[in-house]
Length: 172
Image 1: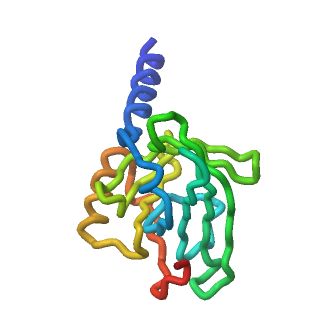
Image 2: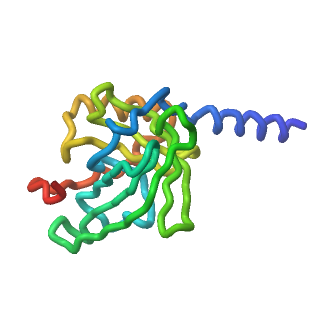
């Protein structure tokens, strides 16, 4: 019984550690280019530099998605992954399903969004995958520190990998 109680308490803690999505995300305002400022480890971005993601609205609450980065170094070859995203509810895109190669779909939620849509944080439910995104390749130190402090309530922020960005803005 004691083991069950410890396991149950652990499960409650694990579920409670994931932040709730923001109340509302306007799909028009969210459209466009986002630069990756920091992320957690994932195999498909292992050698990526100057990573970005672009959301192009195709229909109400739906997007074409283009992930880009440079291989090995910022001077390396450009790598692109194309996919789609759609809202999981009719209330906005604070929770989305991203699909790549027509079969790989993962659900994500936006847990932080600046009022002016200049910065955002997207995560999966387990906080295994976390992205800090900005409309510009570089973020003010104070703003980044505030976001990392927010995330520290839900994860070990030493897991964050800070993304080297392209100073020349070749994505524009």
